[in-house]
Length: 73
Image 1: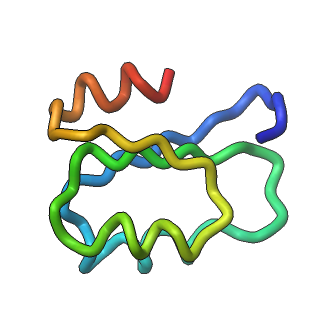
Image 2: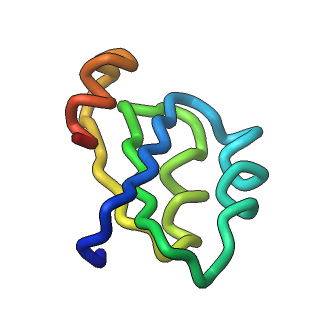
């Protein structure tokens, strides 16, 4: 991960149906970093995230969107 001034935090919780659609919108070359927080998903979200080269942090259990954003910050 580069040390830029902009960080996009993507929070995921059981979002296998939309994760790929969302992450595909980020260009390969960009002037900002993308950090994905998987908030304890129990569906295929984790497998989908492994297909991408984004930095991913995994919560072992669901903590909620507030804690997920806090983790990203």
